[in-house]
Image (cartoon, rainbow, N blue to C red):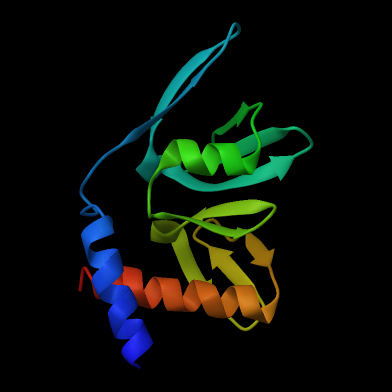
Length: 130
């Protein structure tokens, strides 16, 4: 559709190449942790913390809201599915009508409207690199 084509042109200039390897740093009085954006599979909300699930089965926490984490990431690979989870599109295995399955088998359920928007985003995002 013309709207999707226009969105692709808008996103094309905004998206970095997938080879860009950005890092995320958690720094506070207790710890200093640095990891690649590629290593983030997803980020979940747990009370007042953002919980980062990494590809090596590590879990890191930071006391920030998911909105703050998403702004800090500044990475189009990170998709805000709903108020409780941010997904790394590189680690999505399957998207179905009401759920998203990640590479580690974790399943996130969401409403059909959010899933439809995710599918559109994935088409736009991957369309620029295929």
